[in-house]
Amino acid sequence: MTRSLLVLMLIFFAHTAASQNDHYAKLWLEVEQFENKGLPKSALKVVETIESKARTANHSSQIIKVLLYKSKFSLVLEEAATFKIINDFKAEINKSTSPTKNVLQNVLANLYWQYFQNNRYKFYDRSKTENKVDPNDFRTWDLQTLFNDIHFYFEASLQNGLILQKTPLDEFDVIINKAKGSKLFRPTLYDFLNHNALNFYTTKELNITKPAYKFEINETNYLSNAKAYSVMQIASKDTTSLELKALKIYQNLMAFHLKDKNPVALTDVNIQRLKFVHENARFSDKNEWLEKAFKAERETYKTHEVSSLYDFELANLYATQGNNYSSKKDETTRWKLKEAIALCDRATSTFPKSAGAKKCRQLKSQIEAPHLLIQAEAFLPIQKKAKLLLSYKNINRLAFSVYKLSNSDYQSFNKIYQEDKKKTFIEALSAENIWENTLKNENDYQQHTSEILLPELAGGRYLITGKSLNLDENFFAHTTIQVTDIAVVEYNNDYKKQCQLINRNSGKPIADAKVKLHIKYRNSSNTEQVTSDSKGVINLSKFNKRYYNLSLEVSHGNDTGYFDNYYVSNYHSKSEKTNT
Image (cartoon, rainbow, N blue to C red; front, side, top):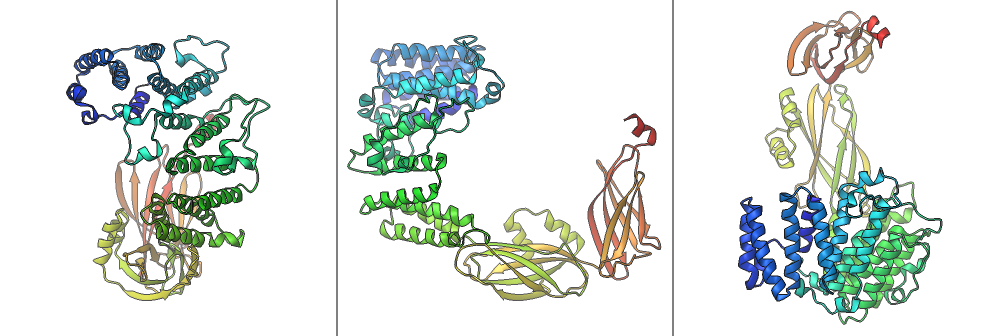
């Protein structure tokens, strides 16, 4: 409950005293100072002083803030704070009038909802109860009972809509932490409370038993234009449906904002509605219907900058389709990313300073972002032709470099995670081979693959980098390989692991190879030296109830190979196996 209330308070009021009027500012500053010093009792005394002043002046927003702070400190100071908090809210609701009452009901519904989110496992493990075990202890309720109370208080908080619509949010600045520009999208208390309720009704978290007549979004007219949707008949026998209630809230908000001269708030809620319907629709071709809806709304507002928001949503839809393209799917989706770019360019050129244009620039940047992945076999034979597999996007030309690494350099490089430090490491190396490749770029913004030849290399560890030559930024990718003719084959039995050393090209055993065994067991490590037998085999003993990790450094003639991450399991005696 503590976490829930703290989260809620972040939503409902600003922490700084700067936003309060001067009459209360000094007192709230004292509260903040006591709280920062870890003195909740002293802070609570000041809060009670503020409460006395606020009730005398009938200052609604200050009373609500007092209640929130008293609840917060109760959680710290009292063991049974949960019951007191809920009862305090209910008592305040019973003696309040709109719009203060609506805000308190909305807060209480959110408290219940956030309690569920933090304790969902308890509710899903609990069967339905005919009666609340304790009507004042929501922790004992089943999920349906809790849902009913959440629904009740959200419903109640949205009553007296005309009063809420005429109440500007400015009257509640003391308890609402507003983002920059939010007044355009949430100009009234009606907007604020309805959107808070939508956070609940659009959730997918509730697992409540559905009736046989479960409501479903199975008609395309839920994607109608804003005006047509605002007068639709939306009804169902399924009174438990969150989706149904969400659709009605969207409808009420849109009917309210269709009367606005500035269509910004209407556009915001309309886009939310269209995306919600699309996400939960049970009819076919819903992508096509959403596309038609965005295009129709864009055309309606083509002379206003909100049209750029519909351009962005269209572009984002195309980008999603384009990102899901594969060669096995419909070829038309291949070019959706290019269509998305065109829409972004249209929005940014027509209304360059609009919110939609800003979103479009971000989306375009994501689509145009380069991608490069270099893959190769971990082990390659000495002085043999081999290939690199490239996976790339939005890159035309690459400069490749091959750097030979000592084993210590290789180990050091693998411990570096920051890209800038990797770059610094690479810049200090001297390249053994450098060449360039031109890549096929069909300007579809899709990811492509290609194979390129790797120069024949002497034995050793290597770092291979590919750096783009057509991008302003220093964009590169890398991979590491090991060139050796030595290969290792593992065999296991109950008491030992055998490693056979063979020639990578011919498969013939490598006899008399010198092998350093780097052994790690828990927090200890040691090194042993062994030699492969005539069949290229080395034997590694297993220990009773003890396992260890192993790395092999194998030398044969001028060739040295490093083989890491081997695991030698423990063994159990026959008597132990019989007992188990």
